[in-house]
Length: 271
Picture 1 (cartoon, rainbow, N blue to C red):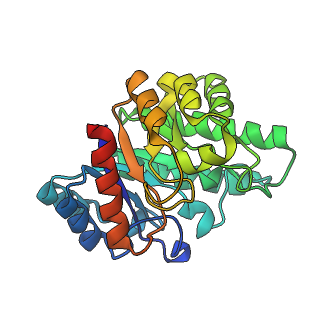
Picture 2 (cartoon, rainbow, N blue to C red):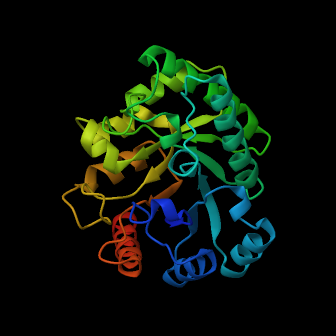
């Protein structure tokens, strides 16, 4: 398993659960200084990322781009994939495809979380789930050209009425014609929704494609009450060799949150 940390460039999300906020260059350099393997970036849109500059920065530091988030599609642009309006749904899909293209150039995946439709999505649940499935079909097929999957994240009940558990997510992915979508299992959401986090990961098996490594209170690992022993054991049992990425509040501040997560990553992956 490899270490990863989130960097947010979205001012509208400031104060949210992203660790580093000090601009792309400073954040990537700090992640490299701490020995992280990769970064996960949340940008307002592809126009905020200069691919050439980012490529040089990653080459210089030796870091990888693990993923790009699409969350700004909802937070900044109010686009969601379950919108009742067909035109707005297409705008949302286009935004996702642009993120896939940007990430794919680096061999990285795009993540769909909040863009799946918030708790107040319009339309009935079955229709909204159908719209989400159509978007995942579209995004998964689009991502295939880069030989990377599209990553879909079940969220807790307070953020969506779509999929809230790993089992829900697996059922949705198994219903698709594309085999190029995988689950992001966020330990914070799982702490709310799952009866047994480790068992949920075991059940997720091959569908588990990315992990948000965070504690029960959305603070960095080690600052809540999560029991990681069975979680790490479950990930090892399913052969997970992807990223454990810190999507946590920058508590008590971004630099210490980054240091705390790296200490926790080293402890749990080396023990």
